[in-house]
Image 1 (cartoon, rainbow, N blue to C red):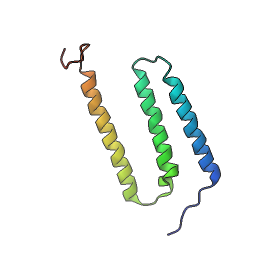
Image 2: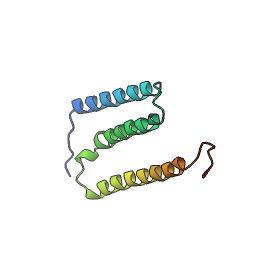
Image 3: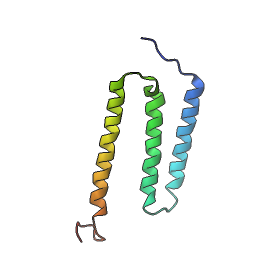
Image 4: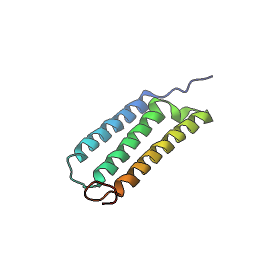
Length: 100
């Protein structure tokens, strides 16, 4: 099995993107966006996770289909968890109790 050689420049670029996204996340935490704070923070966190998975864990260069099945399955369960949590959260009234 041959290893894929990734240039150091790629790692530096990905690292710089991760640092920029971290700074953006920290800066946006101070901006009052109401309900969108969590949505934007989760979107940025998803992009950061994808960068780590693709480049630092070398999934971008993998040819094994089972690896991609596991990655897609993991994201499926994440979105299922978030979706079910949001359906519960959005059905609550101002008192925080379901149906009130």
